[in-house]
Amino acid sequence: MIRRLKQGHAELKDHINEVAFTIGTLPTPSTDEQNQGQAKLEKASRSASLRWRRECRDLSTLEAMLEERKVAGEQAPMENPAEEDQR
Image 1: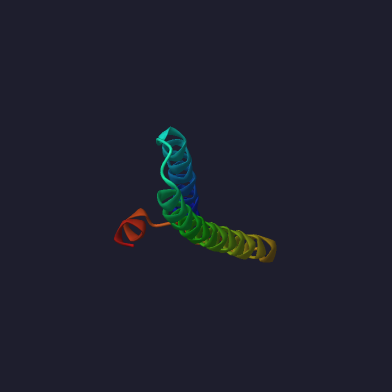
Image 2: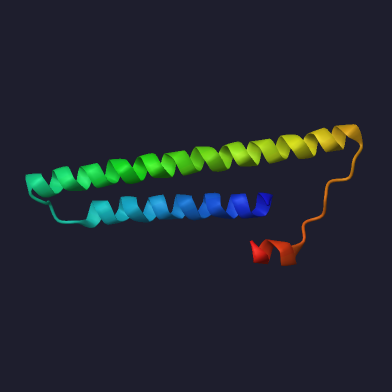
């Protein structure tokens, strides 16, 4: 699960970089187009920010649970690649 979260995190960063590059290479739009584009960008940014925070929170929670098990002397569950593919 940690691996999936880290992979999603990397994919999200790549997507943000692609969007930033695309925005930098576009011709200058009209004022109306700028306003519409700005609104879409703000919405996408909020959505990405919420996803980012959720993934970071999930990753932090999972790492804390694993640390608690380690401190308690329990063995962490093994990841099952077949299970990961089904999700």
